[in-house]
Image (cartoon, rainbow, N blue to C red; front, side):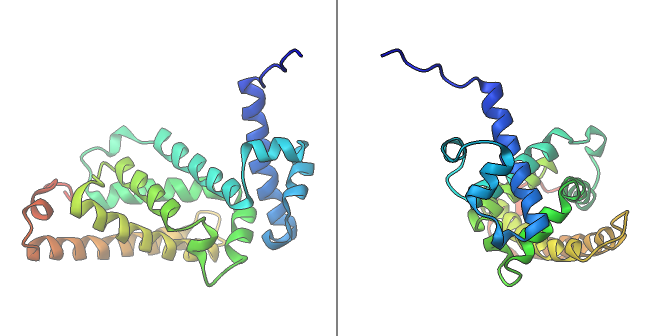
Length: 214
């Protein structure tokens, strides 16, 4: 029996994107808790077998969307931010991320609101969140390696989850409230980090990128 030809890369990429977009569109129109895998397959015009070949679950679809956001932020890095204070670099990176989320705002909001008491769980778990925030640090030219890097990742995860809730209720066209709160909290985080660096007895903590905050 002759083997079937493998799907072309372009076709698989189109199916993957259609599935992600359909999932977010359905979440916006129905609420995430009412969206099944069959609904997503039908809206994306793929079979359940094709959907299963791409994603193992609804959470995997959301995780893929988050990974796409990560890559888009990394692609949009601004070389003119090099040399700016760390708080400004992180502000630029995180606002780019919220700009990208706005493109599918209604769907993302529906997913977040499906479990308001556990936003981290809705975003596919702490490992996915930590992976994203690790890349956001690197996008801001802040190392995520070592003891200091792990602290940064944890701190940025907490900050991002808080900012998601702010963004969730910010209906302004220019995200003015999100920007204002993010600026304040990044400055607060910077002060905390500086204090810990002064107090930490560990050389690795003290000496990693000493001039990064500008």
